Image (cartoon, rainbow, N blue to C red):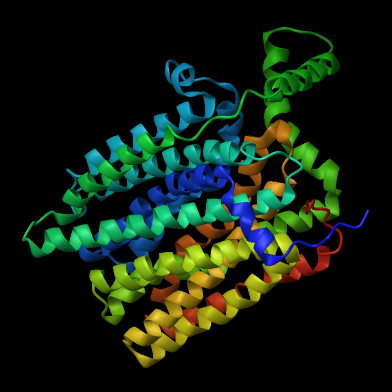
Length: 457
């Protein structure tokens, strides 16, 4: 049967589904914590006089995102007392993590960075752990909003999740930067500490909005997981506390990994993992140091908020939705090749900005181009790994693939500040290197492009 190709209008109409609005909110909840531990924390440390290397190494707290798949089985199975019964399994976990983030912001509001740097980073680590744990549930709840055979709806959902993530990150950044600048101009000495109290109010508002996201009726996911445990127990030849524990660990952590390699074959699975790990490293190096670069080149917090956050959010929303349509029509593989090429080219714009000096026009052009690239790259990437997951292990397998991608972006990119220092502050050369970093992932994708089986319904 030959399926008639959708028109652009028909593809765009997929976004009218009410489920897309719910996914938008989930994405916002997922993106907002990055305002706290990325933009806000980096600029806070910069304005307190800490070195670029220190700011870069502080980014190691993002490493927890690379390992959250290890506790994903716990999120899939364990219920939170009171919260699960009142809110549902997924929403209960999200609210618990939001409470942890809120309490961390309260602690930050009392900390002096230069006197209590270790405590400040520790609290940042707690926020990162809570955020990474929350992401497991957010991604699972987002995927479970859409049926397994709705490939085009999954691509649209990926686009809305990305729009939501950038909405939480960009608009949250606008709030953070303008609030900090307002308090600073008002003469408040600890203006960042006061800003974190305002951001805590945003967390509370997001929890209220979460109540409008419906949790799907319980699936047979847990029954299938128990069946897997039972099969492993039978292989072990007995049933007792020890074998039950071994079956649980093997079935929930090893099961998703075995399933992934069995489905794709070892060579293709390894190629997929290599691509996932490498794809956004160049973008991560640029992103980790971008706000420090903006500050050093002479832009104010207000200008950064307008161009990098506000204008960037509008660009991201528009081109993420278009990226979703492109993924629906051309497929995720072609979209990722397109985005990878753009990623390499746009990083060069920042090198030009570094060489020419402060220019609001060039700054705006570079930020817009970077956001367009990030929109296409991220929506294709999210759709790609969403279509690869086994619904029996939704949270665990998606968290595993996402964690591998995050590992490349966070662990390696933490050396970004040290790299700039090693280059003696030569930002132009730094951005050239981030361009070259894009190439290895595209080579991986080229070799496996015709062997990956992804549903495009």
